[in-house]
Length: 276
Image (tube, rainbow, N blue to C red; front, side):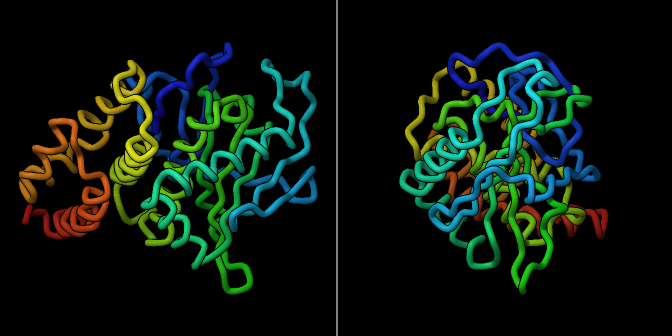
């Protein structure tokens, strides 16, 4: 659930969050993976949208700002944030072919929607949330389905390159899982692990620095905690792939492909009570 902090972040107050598989700006070394799949966030009605544009097949919406006095940080302008989201989508498509194919896969099955809402998350929640995939918005619309991510007031302050990585995690990572009907059937920690691998794939494809403290913490949390079970599976099923991963040369696309076998093995284990 955690992402590396953006470079030179503004001062943000600590706060609380109860939302589905959302990304927190808390340091990966201290933030716990949020596997709150029983809680959904509902969008405000689209009648409250200030602007709406389509960009590269993605429906991007900027909601009207709530009263600024209700919040402790400046609220980013919807038009400026929509422009930032467009730039982030461009980066994903141009820099990461695998991620671009993931977006295309979702587009074939439904409508991709990214909503900026400065009222997200609720002030009563205690964790700072950057963005979240909305499982509850996955509903048939004219024979299609929506894949919806909401970007909140904290995410609107992130640099474009960091926001792009968040969108890969939330929209592609969790969107493909929703398409494959994994929510409610596979373990939340495994869903989060796979989404983190999508995010790490983007970091590699975009040639983002891998030696920063935040990036090292992100990988450490991924490897040692969130993806611990998957890594044991890889070590047994594909030792060569595991060695490459451990030596800093991971085949991220190959790992994502192998995750499908891992899901099948994990389901088999839960059903029979025995490892294969």
